[in-house]
Image (cartoon, rainbow, N blue to C red; front, side, top):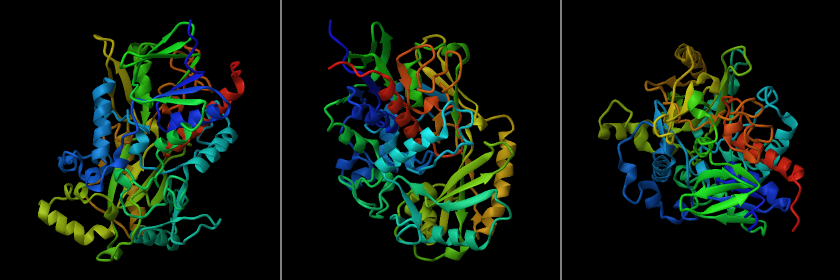
Length: 509
């Protein structure tokens, strides 16, 4: 009888998967990563193909989603996921990836860190998470935006755009009435100094189109590093479709192959993991609660910057913000402010109440003074559930919605933020919109750590019902604050993998 193919099989090459792989490989564990994608990607394409698409996909009608989801790369990733995952949405946009690097191909790259209050109800301590935050930060490279060339600690920074810098200055000289509103330079997973295999940001504005320099972190970069280890093996084009258990766990793939290991680590993303576990959980009885962040987009105009020239910068978040709207620990929103001049013009021209020609002329005149703020609510303001088709028992449908009274809270927040925009010399333009649930792609909470019952997992991400099945993606994050979640998912995956490397005896070689 053949032995297992590895000590650990990791499903998925996204940020969670690679973060789990590094500690296990370093400890000498045999790791097999199954990836539905491959090495081919937009990095090898010319700029025109990346911006317009091989079939001119960029010229398709604007569907109202975020500009980052309308690039040719994003459209291809999302369409492949929707076509193969068997997951549909009702009042919900399912977002997932089967590409090498997972959703890091199309993420916003903004970095946030949870604090002790944010994880007060989690079955882990903040110190262990902070150690993992540090390891992840050092590995992926992060930079803060600034008006100076170096931070107060001597670290390299990236320049703020002129309009963002103006707004940040206004925030300094016109203090908010209380501490409920904070504005600060954003932190992004982008390099301000070159590293081996990755160039520093060249401020070319290609951030949404695959970042050909590699300045923006993408977990496919980590896959290249992992492949240098003799303990790591990667198999391309292996889309996992089933999990079965006998003496060990066996993963079946779409091409009919199978691979076994004592422990499986699921890093397929919240929706992908739910699909893989559909036959192992009583989803049809009540559905899986899915946390996501209700998202508000607000266009802003800086009159003081009208007709002023823009300055070279990246098109990631320029400024970060937070605003507390209630007394509970989770009652705050976070967000980011982007310079519109560095984003695809067509997405904004299509939203103007003008003809295309007039809209373009207007945009070219005022684009340098326009900003867009994206505001994220905590997951407790969402009401989304994953349901299994009762007839076929196969496909999954996500029904999206908002918490009771959310519309009232959203309107109150808009009014409160208008006061802050006015203080900052900004005019809120018509067109503020609440995105359909799912567009945020901030998913969590389907299989929370520390929860009892069939949908719960241990502090090490192991399913209560199935020993040997560990989950390291956002599925196990118990609750979803309004902060950007990717860094926490990566840190938690790192923490779990270190635990498994310490507690699981190394097999005899």
